[in-house]
Structure formats: C-alpha cells, structure tokens
Image (spheres, rainbow, N blue to C red):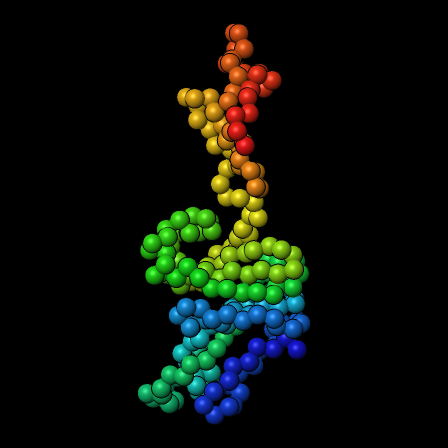
Length: 205
C-alpha cells in the first residue's frame, strides 16, 4: 500500500520501490521529458521522482583521506540511471484523484498567457503538472522548478471580470451564468458625478 515501483519491462524485474505514501496511490503522470514521475493519492501528497545518472558502486567505495567517497576504485565505470525521491508537496486537504501534464514549450510559444494565468510569470520549458481531488481544488506546479516553486491553487471563479463598461456611452454589461444584462446609467445628480441607480435602465437581457 502506498508504494511507487519502477520495473524493467524487458525482463519483468523490479528495479526500485518507494514507500513514501502513507496510503493508496491513485494517480501517476510522467513529465514531457520523461525525466520525472509524479505520484499522488489518498494521503493528499504529490511526490516527485527524478531520474539521475550515477556510478553504481560510487556509494559503496571506501572513503578517501578527506572523507569523500573514492570513486577511482572502478575507473571508467559507466553511469547507470536511477530514480530518486526529490520532494513532496501537500497542498490538497483530501484525496488527490487526478493528475495531468501540459503546457510544454511547444504549446507555450503560442500561448504565452498560460504562464500569467498560472502565476509563474515565465514560460516553463518542461510544462506544468495539474492536480485535482476530493477537495475540489485545482493546483498547478512547475515541472522544472518543482522543488523551489510554491504550487498555486487556481480560482474556481471566472478569470475575467463579470462586468464590462463603456464609459463614454454610460453603459455597463453584467455577465450572469446564462444571461447578459445591458444597463444604461442614469444622468448624474446635480452637483455630483454620481448617478442614481433608480434612474438606470435595463436595455436588454
């Protein structure tokens, strides 16, 4: 329960197993570059696993005089890919049931507004991770800066204003769920710039 495992598909053998989650894992997603895997589930955590290249016997080598690992014991040793647990975020309050990846560089070039909407301020070369769950929150994470960047919750309310105005014509438009109301403001009250709401007219809806 709560394990994320990496397998060798060619031989069907288990390569690595992580038991960081405290309950069932419900969702997995892979970054566009395939250098990171993200797991989430019942314990509301989103955990990142990164693929790194290391020397297989580097950690097992005896310590040199300076206290550092002596990697010269096996000269020219080839590097081997391994998965490491880097960091975990817990933004949700309940089960995380869905993960999605998107906004890679090829789409951000034509949609520069995505970075502004998500609050990152810059284009993300590796894209974004989106998580959603029982608490109804939608949270966005930076793939390339997953450990450093603070995840952000997206507002469930419309990103655009519900009111549009045409000051010169004294008109304003109210956006409702299924209707639009167009109002014309009344004339300003004598001696002030304020208008009476009672003199405003609903022109159409």
